[in-house]
Image 1: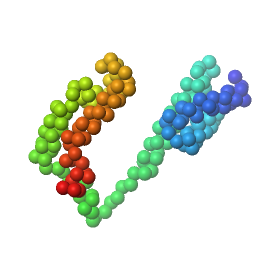
Image 2 (image 1 turned 60 degrees about the vertical axis):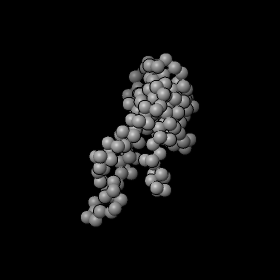
Image 3 (image 1 turned 60 degrees about the horizontal axis):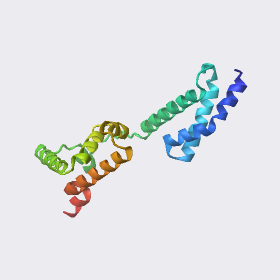
Length: 174
């Protein structure tokens, strides 16, 4: 395949790339930038493309890697390290450890609140809290994905109502 043919074929996948980029960025302008970066990299590194392989998959991989690398750069760029001899009350508050007795009471309250949540709601919530994805919970419990999301939402609301004494708004008024 000639360079011009490959470049034309790369550009013909623009609409698929735009849809894929929008899933990453959730913003049309950022998605367009990501598509442009992907196409530029694909054209620049066209010699790395092996003829006969899935071009769309190759482009998606370039896009995913570009997005991840840009995200990491932005995180590093936005990280601020402050070195100061004077510690503000904000810094002291954030670095202070909580009273272990207070933590035990909080954990007891969380356990009590969790015991008040019906198992069909608490199990999906706990699985999600443990790091399982919605679709994994749905498969494990043999229920629709939407039901999993609803049950997790309901469990959160029940827990929130039983644990409102720990919310910032509650502590301000108390």
